[in-house]
Image 1 (spheres, rainbow, N blue to C red):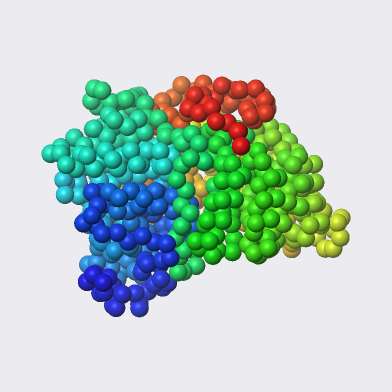
Image 2: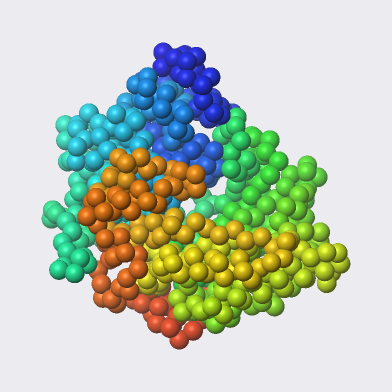
Length: 614
Ligand code: SF4
């Protein structure tokens, strides 16, 4: 045991909540000798262990990088308040879980960017590691700070803090980068020269310090372009072509402590072509890339044998669109039901197949059926391109109640383009109707939990030009809904309005927001996605101190030809397609899924032809 680990174990951990999250050594974790490795990378998740360890991406990259003989890959998560205070008091630097190595001794720190409200945690973790928070303050001796994940497709608010962003699928670009970095470590190239080399060699690597941004008189962007000749002006997101041939972690780490998702997760399909106009994941991860049924069952068997978890989650953006769902469920049920292993789905899309799904979901625990209609009226659904009907939804729910489910969870968004009070009232009516379906099939009213989130317009979507509704309007909608839903068996969970506004600011933000993030972190903001930590007023003060007008980023209708802070990042889908989809939304025109209808020429399949072969 090294001296840092001994000190922390004996003196610090007895004083903190859930010490098991800081000890490492979990089943299937990997400890390697640092002296044998050419590259040492710490995967940093800017939230707690219990959230980070529930995230499949961390498990994939951890296993993938540790498969390499030349690489040591370890993990680090954001410490909770009590741990952080003691670490600061005793001058203990942030360390990796596997070997208690201080982060600044790694070659590379790789942050996983899952949501915008984790930004202050990144600054805090760097500071706790003794690594300069501002990228331009880092010296040759400091680790390289990289970042990737869904939020990296609109990375500008973090431009001051991250050395290199990797855009797109990590399995595709990280191994290439590690090999490149290993070679460059043997050279006399400076840190800056290495970053230039990476930017030149890898089309998925974005080095923000190598790009200049100029602004117009009205504060919009005039141009974003490389500072040096030879750098590609457009960064292209990496996209794996075939899920069946890429690495999957069949020995996932089994945490000692309770995590958000304590189960095996198998990604059955990547991408979604339904084309919901609000959906950043759907737009940016096209085309669909399914795993074969045989591969999924094989991976599930291996993960089960290596972990002993009693639940397997079949994950996908839209599992209902998996081309061989019936066969998959039959084979999974045959393999795992006798062993009392639960099979779960994140949420189901409403379609004509929904009524057949409850009988396929021969699960051990029928905890709740989760559906995401997003809007409650047909007109609004056409505007957002959510191609579902009430009839399909009711048929599916009726069948679920018949099969023994008691609880239905429904996700909606409010503040969608053109929404009126009638659209809001329709959410309440729909919830009542769903609850009554339980009485139709026998028994009492069904339990319905409706989860409402304000619509946050996101980059790389057809609604990226659209203003977000005001805080005042969100609160009016909230009150209206609570007024209209007065049945005990219908519960409303309304997403925090202020947090949604902050998410909206950063989701379409530019690099001028860096000074706001820095100010907010200095003023004590962290864990902003947590209700109990979030301080909206502190953020508003930070905007004021930094001299940045926040409404500019969130409540403004953008012009059709405005240059966006993410225009130099390509996710495959081309801007003319987004403009066309925006126009179609004005006319309530539905664009069908391209797997079953004509190609809308979104641009994504230029990257892969492997659409739906299973
Ligand atoms: S079905 Fe719609 S909301 Fe769901 S992932 Fe696909 S595009 Fe996004």
